[in-house]
Amino acid sequence: MTKVTVWYDGDCPLCIREIALMRRLDRGKMISFVDLTRFEAPCPVDRQLMMDRFHASENGELYSGAAAFAAMWRAIPLLRPLGLAARRSWVLNLIERAYLLFLRFRPRLQKLAGGRIKR
Image (cartoon, rainbow, N blue to C red; front, side, top):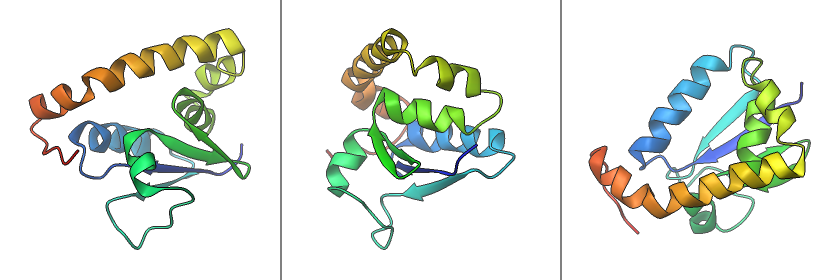
């Protein structure tokens, strides 16, 4: 398996919970998690763009949305089959559609989770 870097919004309560789960599942420590709210953190593209949409890099290639989730999943043995399945375009398209739907409801879900929204 390859090393993966994941950037996340450290002000998003949903993101914090998800990253906490991924850290627990990442027993091999194959993922580097970068909190974008820490401005000293390296950021390969526009910081706001990365905070608005999930990003990850795998083998030096930057992914966003469903492709970024798939890259992260491939680094976690338990989720690896799902990440590998997402290499098929129809599976990735299905996951991307679900992710875009989630993004529409993200602000409301953040409010329900008790987080502050700066956007």
